[in-house]
Image (cartoon, rainbow, N blue to C red; front, side, top):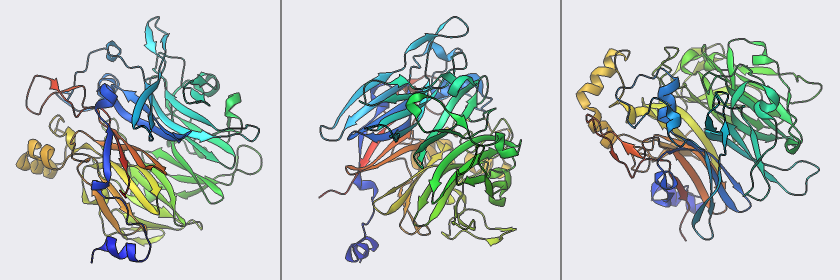
Length: 487
C-alpha cells in the first residue's frame, strides 16, 4: 500500500504530485520578455500576477555576471526593449487571462522615456481598520533613472494607483521586495538603492503603515538593526506574537524579531546570526513561513547561488526552523558544530536537497496541511557560464557530463513538499519538464487549488548551447501552473 493511500486511510490529504498540476499560462503570457512571475496574490476571487521583464538584458547591463555568450538577446541599452512591467489576472471560473495593468511611460532623470516600473516584486491583500473592503497592494521596482519605487493600490482589480510618494516618501530607493500584513498593519523594507544592486539597499530599515492608502510609512527599526554589515532587510513574516525579519549579510544572514510594541523604533531581538553558523554560504533568508508550530527559513546567495560581485559561492541552500523559544533545528543542509550544539539535517538531505545547483530556496507556502518549497536552480546557465573561477572538481564534473546532457536531463527548478517538516518528497525536479523554468518564484493557496508562477528568462528567443544564432523559444518566458486533486 502506498504512503498516499495510508494517508488517505487516516484522513490526511495526500498532497499534490506532478500529475496534479496543469499549466495555465506559458511563454510570458504570450510575450517572452515577461521573464519572472515575480508576485502573486488571490484577490476578489481571482489570481493576480505581476511580471518583471527582460531580466537577462538588465543583469548584463548592471552586474558583473560571468556569462559568455548570454542565452538571449541583450542589447547594449536594455531599454531598447519593452520593459514595461505588467499585471495579469486569471479567473478560475472561466479559465481566462486578462492583462489589467501595464506600467506607464515616464520621462527619466536623463530626459528620455522609460517605464515607471520594470518589475512588480511583491503583493499583499490588506484592509485597514477604518476601511469597508480590502485592497490589493503591489510593490514595484523602479529604473535607476526613475523617481523611485512605489506601492500601487487597487480596490477593484483594474485601476492601480500609487498610494505613496516615490521611494516610500522620498528615499533614493528603487525596489521593494516584500509586503507583509501583521497585527493590523502593513510592513515592508527597501531592497535596492538607486545606482546599485536590486538586492542591496542603503536603507536597511523595516517600515510600518497602518493606513497604506494614506501613503505614510514610518521606520520602526534601526538601520541594519545597528549592525553595519546588514546590507538589506531581505524578507519578513509574522509568527506567533513576533514579526521575524531576515537580513542579507556577507558574513552570514541574520534573523531578528520584535513584538512591535512600545515606541518606535521597536525593540528587536537577534535570534540567528552568521547564517545559522554556516557563514557566508547562507547569505540571506530568502523564504520564511510558519508551519505547524515553527518558523521555516530557506536560505540563498544572491545571484542565484553564485555572488560574483563578492566572490561568494557557488553553494546550495539550506532549510532551518526556529521555535518560539528561539531554539532552532537544521532541516536541510550541512551538519556542523554550533554554539547551540551539534546540528545535523533532520531530513537527511544535504544542501539543495542534494542538488548543488539549487542556489535559492526561494518561496514556501502551506496548502491543505502540506508545506511546499520551490527553488531557483542555475544548472540551465551552465552552457553559458565562464568557468575560470569555478572549483576544479566542479568544472571537471561538468566537462565530463556535458552541458547539453545536464540541460536535457537535470534542469529546471525543484518543488518539494512535507507534511511534518522533516520528511520531504519531490513533486518535480525538472521545472515540470521545462528546463528553462529556472525558478519557482510565487505561490498562492486558494480554494481553487495551489497556483505557482515561474522565473523563466529564456525568451522570447534563445541561443542554444554551443550555437551562435538565436531561435524562437516557445518554452521561454514565465509560466503559471494550477495544482489540485481531480474529483
